[in-house]
Length: 299
Image: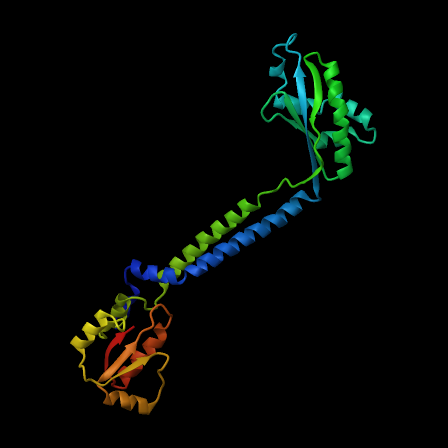
């Protein structure tokens, strides 16, 4: 046996593939656990980040512009402009008149505006952790915005377009992304670990592994295959008395050793893919010390 040749052998892709297939379940399991870990971690993070339950109301308002006197008025009132106007004094002060219990800072912290497509549709978003306060501010804007149209010449009217109900809102809703990222990272790590384990694994998986580790013992092939039948008929006698021995059946028994010495030889049974290299080493060493002839190995 040449240990130097065995431990310095080149990478065998066939061998790695066999190992990869046998350990593929590890990659699948690690990926699933990674997805679960990513999902749970993100849920914990989002709960800590968002704090209490967040409520939101999104109401749409229809804006009628005074195109006759101000044909370019729509160019001024864009999405960015409205987001600021909604928190300017004319609208905020009117909202506080309608709901005296709310403060200016509460409005500034809660209200945002956006125009998603049609420049005539303004969406007012009120967000907060106090459900009653969110509803109060949203209702106050139903009065404040029409009043704003009365004092601005460029706008003829602002009317409530959709009156939405309050809803629970989570600003951190990326659980699928977190699960995918966790699974992808786990996939890469487990794939790397399985491949590296395969490279450094010294178990016997292929005929080449056997030949490098035990060059003096002939590999006959897999039992009941044409390769095995041809090799056995060529190398062994049809009427020979050969004892088949696996590592699981091996024991230190003098009577068994004597029986093997009296036979024409021992056929070792290899279980590839299982980490029984040390056990096989022990069997080979012991049989050699007992002057027992090993005529070949088969799977």
